[in-house]
Length: 152
Image 1 (cartoon, rainbow, N blue to C red):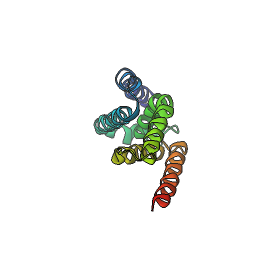
Image 2: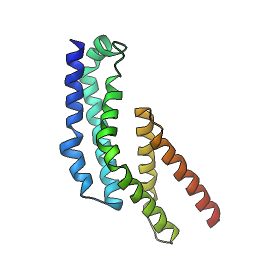
Image 3: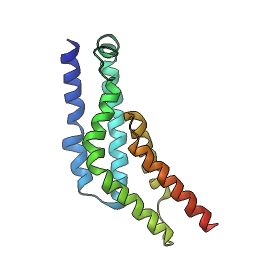
Image 4: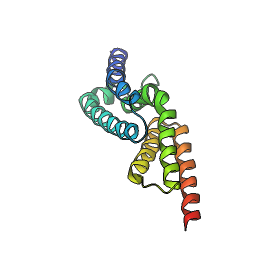
């Protein structure tokens, strides 16, 4: 019973990013890409929150801690990571770095957007228990500290 339930949940949670999220991200770049990624991430977290509420009882009694399966939340965020992050992270990092380069060149940029994008990297790294996104954020924070130190 729990194996069937877990497979159904996993299938449903993996369906969301493919037809909806990826096409909208693939066609955008730079600031529009970052805005779209953050919007889709927010929507995904909301959808996951309600899916979890719906399946909470079943997870608590049939899934968690059994057969070494991850929690439903970890399954959901790992799905987003493998379906969206893996494909888009290079393009997203390039967009962040391009915006930082424009700021260094003296242009005005949306710094909140960069901070929100870095928060996304940190959050997805924590939620999926992976280090790569967190390392990128740490590197960017060091770069930003150097940049602010040089401008003062």
